[in-house]
Length: 301
Length: 263
Image 1 (cartoon, rainbow over the protein chains, first blue to last red):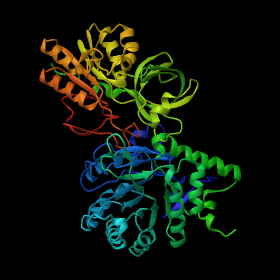
Image 2 (cartoon, each protein chain N blue to C red; image 1 turned 120 degrees about the horizontal axis):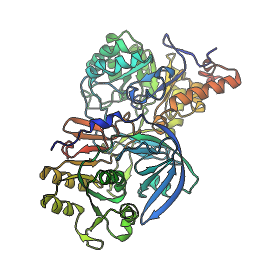
Image 3 (cartoon, chains in turn orange, purple; image 1 turned 90 degrees about the vertical axis):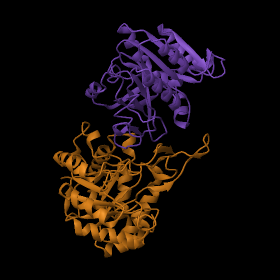
Image 4 (tube, one colour; image 1 turned 90 degrees about the horizontal axis):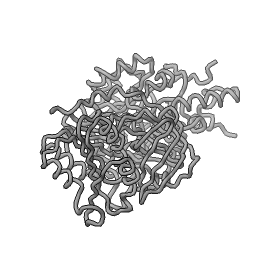
């Protein structure tokens, strides 16, 4: 019996542990360490219609129990990935979640359509700026976010996850996205933050502000997964500071069916695989299944 | 002369995660020389390659050039700068750490005479290169910037202890000649000495050394120090703009040809 097997939007995952977007690129850097098919899925780096050079350096800095990043969504553009990394990733036998973004709803739809042949799921990054909406992130505006999801749903036959931002109003956005036909949710994206350089007397990051990730944000993430679970019947991919089986199980109790390991991979490239193994041992020792834990934290004592 | 291709180094061995044990931590002025037991990893670094070292109590690893290596051991130079490196220099022997390595594209095999231009603990990245150049019969000119004798202890204990003559430079003349180490390089190049130029240190120093190499038509190489998280090419933190487009310092570098970098 595979205690970790889990159904998610009609797809059977051998275990619930996936990589988080932007922390694993397209998997090639890690493929010599272990077969990528051993993970629940690989979530790719965000893909846009056109290449993006990204933000000025420094792009990362460490913070207490976390890190700030402002990579600036650097990527080679969808055509390069459809020609190279995505077919390669499918050949590895991995399940693939392709993270997509753009400047406009049409941009998102264009990318989603092109990557669909290689995607088991599409994850829509709603935290990027809406260029026709005063550069406010889509995730801060329920109507703008819903417009993106409607266009993406029309462009792909794959299930569509909306990645929600803790910097915006999560529940109103989720409600609007459900009405727009979203299939599931992933959360949380990073929390906006800043660190100052005392020598230079200015922000450390080239982009000034960045996204906080790592163990520091885990309680925020668990709480937001818990809140969203109470308000939706769509499945949830939870993430934010997961680096152990215990962390993953907290997310399951809050309502996550899948969990992503992100920043922990920078400290330990084996982290996603290790979390899956630890989960297996944990559940084996208790004769339980992952599915037993999903949302179990909501049951009254 | 066409600079030797860096593509050869692409056949580097695959990196993995290794356990290291701190054997010695030797203060040398404001810097430290760490000697670590590193079975399976030591001996596999090409000059200029680096490892990504765990720091107890810190989330991210720290990229550090390997200064020297032997059977089962390797040496790193560390300067306490932020909380992570301060923690590293305070560790006591016996502590176990983890390191990803060997990482990055190092220096191509040196051919002929070499000039090294450095400041600070980054000089670690050039030590094995100096040994290779000398073993190949080349002369090794070392121009090092240090604000005082104390700061230079690290170089005395590594380069001078191995018999390399070092020309020191300080801005106020308190150690060695007054000025920047690139002034020594300029004199050498102006005298017509056919050296390949290698530089590691602050960005402005590397840029100045690179420009001199270009000006005098000599091969030039720098090892760029850019904030990185994963160290293996996945996170895209360590972007470097080159004439062939944006590259990653961790896997496409840290060694770049002077002409390749958009300074």
